[in-house]
Picture 1: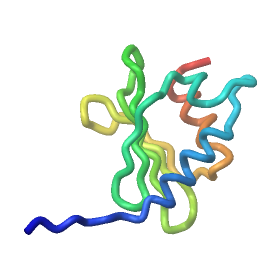
Picture 2: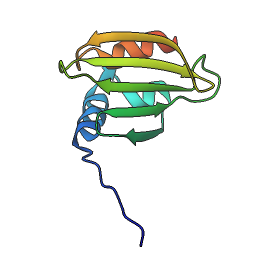
Picture 3: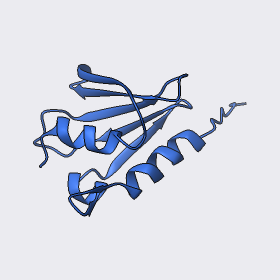
Picture 4: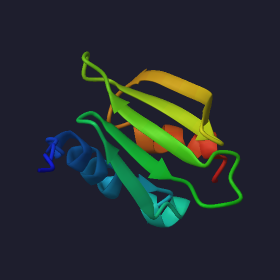
Length: 102
């Protein structure tokens, strides 16, 4: 018999809602960046899949115990850059700035 492990996804759903509500130069965050895919990892991490042609292939958005966010920019499965201790109203802008999408 196979056992299914269910995770609470409310944290990741909140992150997605915050990103969907974010506007970059008047555009929806996802439309502006071209990000279409994501994965919910554990109970506190959202992994955004970055479109081809970027210097990164994913961004891990992690909620810390201090209710701040850490952003880890990945390429080829390895961390290339990180931004730690930011608040929810900042992380869309920080992602856009680090992706170089202006």
